[in-house]
Length: 105
Image: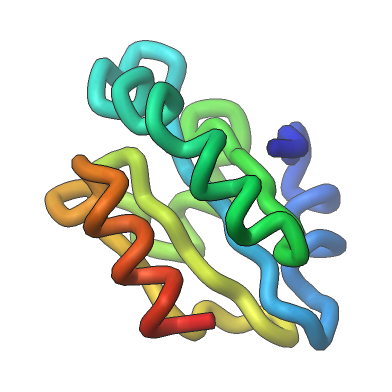
């Protein structure tokens, strides 16, 4: 998963025609660490999609723009707009993430 370190990096990543996935997280977040444990095989299944991660504390403008409250938060973007969101309360298992991706990609 490629890290987006600046707001400009974020805007460039999400503006294309193809779907991209951005995981919003924070270093202090225990649920984010759990998420990181089960996401690699899912990323492999969906390797044709570009995956990014963005630390909401470091790029707060992007987090605010997308109303990021709980984390981890998984957003799918197309042409700069969010087309689907898997909020933190639903992102706790690999099954839920797979279901979300199946329904929204």
